[in-house]
Length: 418
Ligand code: GTP
Ligand code: MG
Image 1 (cartoon, helix red, strand yellow):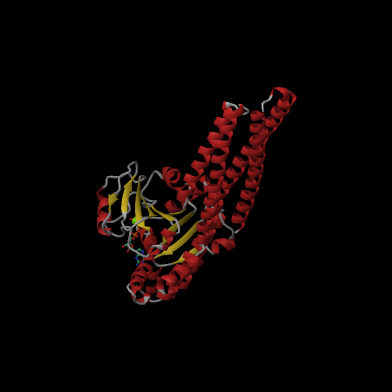
Image 2 (tube, rainbow, N blue to C red):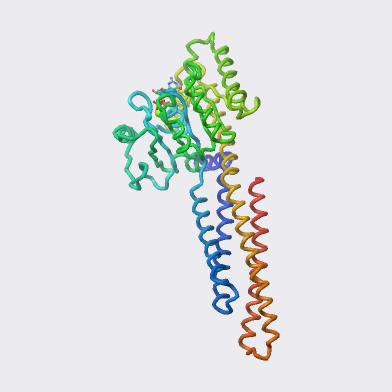
């Protein structure tokens, strides 16, 4: 029953929009590949039989086969990417762990994140690490070992370590979300490189702030650069460590409204990436540490409030879940749009190109046929037979390609609308 419940819950996840779109577009490209391969065989046969197509054309067709294969390859690797930024110790790694429901990334004293860490799903039961520029899979037995491995490495802060974590242990990884953790924005002078190397294809950015202080210049500057380099990035702001506010209940409301106003102003007036309404839906007050503890308790079958750090747990826990819901909606919509729209328009133009080439060949075949008709006396039955057959095949092929283009267009626009 638990498995069933989880499956049902999973089906309702907004991430499924991306998962389903990805499956659909992969299927469509699978069909396109079949057509292209089939057409190429046909074209090659035409060349061998009657030399109606020349070498250049055959090569062009071969190139479509490669192009389609390349797009399929990219498609299988497409995912949704979220990147976390903020000052050192604000709780970036803790937020990611809370979302993953497991302490995967090292956090806290002695475990400062000192390079980019990307967490992504892998098949099978074994977690492993991969360093930039190497294909070697380094075994990760447990979190302690992972932390040590990351500390021992003399890595530059802009380099990337990829952590592969069994998909089946976390629904977000199963649904193709990839998490990018970063060193504190206050410790680096290479922010431009960071953005160029790790952020260009991020669908969502999460700014993790410390609710106990105010947003710093370094944090603001970083996002100014991001929004200069990317058009309208999706930015969420988490005021983390909100559990600390329980110590001062008399100031809680005023602090909250002050932070909220500043965050909304930052998104709307400074960065100009959201309107007021949207920005209000992108600012949250949470406790990552508490959420993680609650979820670890839940995993043990205990009630989540056993993980509470301070008064007001329930509200903060709900707010974290609310953040996750809005985040999931945003990332899956954004990823479908940015990743698949491009593929589908390339698919359309590819099939359009092939179609006009085939039209062309068809025309030439007709001329060729008429020419031969004029010299009918010279023709043997055999040649005529081949020709008729050829004409039939060309016509069939043309019809097929036309249908394919229409079908692809329909499917793609249907998938995008969904
Ligand atoms: P760097 O990697 O050093 O840049 O830090 P980080 O932003 O990844 O912060 P990290 O997740 O390592 O958290 C720093 C410390 O703050 C850890 O000891 C966490 O347990 C603690 N912490 C994180 N989130 C919260 C929170 O919401 N409330 C409280 N009380 N502590 C938190
Ligand atoms: Mg960290």
